[in-house]
Length: 136
Image 1 (cartoon, rainbow, N blue to C red):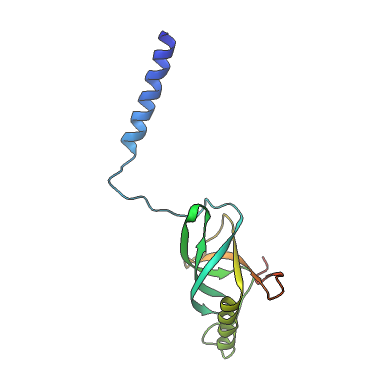
Image 2: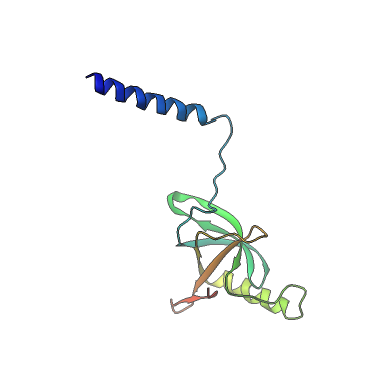
């Protein structure tokens, strides 16, 4: 019985230290950086296309969580906006995001120096085939 009370005391002490270190007065930021395993998620919305390889999207995560971010396709380098072929690249990606189901594969190294999510994008064509837009 004394051993049980001793263990219970240590558990209560550890729990008390945990509560003391956990500041509930400040809201916690939910971040996916560095903790997301290599997984594929559905993209539910693309409100804005920046150029031929970068766009804003809403990603449907597990447990009903939606994550809004700017993504850049890994292994896929399109013409920039100021390039003469940049407008066509942006229009192609805009059309693709409107007519196809998109999926995003994120791994542990998922942010670039601009804060964009680096990912592999897969889309579903009209026949139901999955085609990888980016090739990492």
